[in-house]
Image (cartoon, one colour):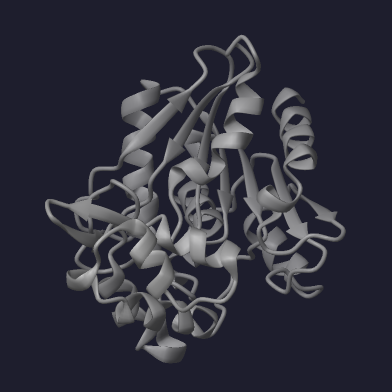
Length: 274
């Protein structure tokens, strides 16, 4: 197994008190609480259906920052957290986008921790670069934090035209004393984006090719209107995860759990119970 630096501490939020342990991992610029609606539905009205854990990945939310990005480092940080919280129990691990890649690497590096795996709208491959996110990075860097007077002022100055995207990105803006700061490690993401086709965030680590395939069941969910999972990705997916089963949800994009939460909850409940 490839050696990585000591993993950073991760912030978590627990939802539910009994039942199977289910960990949720968010995507780039996200936070664990992005899965809050799904976790509450999974836990049930009496908080007995599942013990859900919403995890802030390294460099995101309230988790510690890392000096350099690596999927192995992210996976090991999550593994350390799950071992600490679960006391050695195995987990159902659900990951979207960057969180999905992290979840896959976690299952390959620490298979004893992962009872079942759910990968949402991402494939085990490199995507070339962070070109899709470069505009967001520039918008965030251009926001004059030292001049902001309020969150409303930040919303007015932030130039992103898509209101949903604006709200998603600005969830990373936090008060810092009398001023403001980005909670996400924006400098790290920007440095990685500057690597172009060598982006590690957009890439896939070759180190996992020396590991055994993950033997547990895998639910692989894709958005029918998303381009993150292609027709040619199935063979590569089953190379690492031979028991993967693809569920494509029509009419939704990359944010599958936001666009179709009821379908995701139903699919997760069935998958966890089988």
